[in-house]
Image 1 (tube, rainbow, N blue to C red):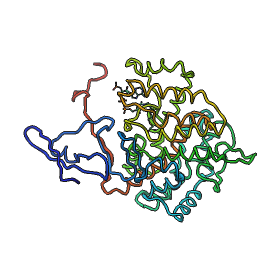
Image 2 (cartoon, rainbow, N blue to C red):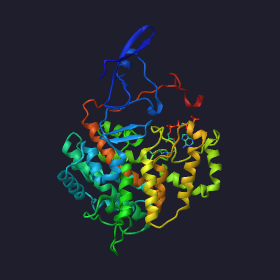
Image 3 (cartoon, protein in one colour):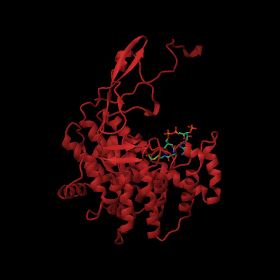
Length: 428
Ligand code: CMC
């Protein structure tokens, strides 16, 4: 807490509110007593000015384009660390020692398989079901298989559930893909890296050996690291809100998956790639730029803009370099990448986008990479969910352990009818 207070005058009375300061970032006015003292709420749809919790996991400075996990810059993590190191870092607060990392990798690998009966759940879905629909259902169903890790008051059970979720998500996402194309499920191969194992479960078949391409594995590792956490975004806030009622971790992560599915959040890379395909040719870009600027047209440039980053998205830089690397390795020239690069160039020099501080976000290039690797577009958000599970469980654990934690219960500005008497049906 700082010595500073903010005072608010209400009908002749003055109320002082303490100002809290974090380790870095804007100061925060503590308004917890506001309603009790003034009888008023604050109004902040979309929480654009509201901190919902205290957190020590991820820091973002949107103006400067900074993203830190436990203090470490995202570009350094994407360059040097494995996804398991980042997972450990997010969960435990520090980078692991060699032994800690080996133990963590071993523990996660012990949980990669899913209960054999879970496979029958998949058969209940239509073959053409969206993988996110399957993920919502199947991840929620995990709570019926792993009762021994649903007591959220026991820190050990919380950690076991966290390990299970991190370990099983790639298996479940790969199963969703295999189911949609009618191929047999692939069991995990624990000698492979987290991303190598995921690639094998997705693209391998039992009839043949599968060799993991190191360039693709590296790209997937980066994509997973770039998506691992992003402080109090919509899906993470959903996980926290669901968890605040004491719901079990599997149910909370299923809620996060549902929220992530939306095109304004995790669905944006799918939407961005579809848009780039629709544009199709560089000479059609001006038409789409004009539509994005037209107030009467709901069209938006997907993969552009961010609630928090108003300068550049540091994840987008790494993603762009990775797109070049993957396409070179695969010997593919993708017209969609040409459209993406030209669209970025034109938009970044256009007054509308400059003035509104709209820059490419992480999703602008990730779709191009995932498409080149061979993922169908409807798997993109499922991959995001696999990676973000690490952040979700870290944030969920932090919330449960926080003594200030309360059930999340926003207030409202009521604008509906005032009290009135019931009118019998025959009088209406
Ligand atoms: N194309 C054209 N105009 C845009 C765009 C866009 N992509 N994004 C924002 N604007 C305009 C918007 O019309 C508004 O204009 P005005 O002030 O004249 O009304 C202004 O910029 C501010 O937009 P906003 O919707 O108030 O901003 P927001 O912070 O609520 O929205 C956003 C952020 C990411 C939802 C939005 O930029 C968007 O819809 N982008 C496209 C979807 C997308 O790429 N989402 C992925 C986000 S990154 C992945 C993740 O972290 O989940």
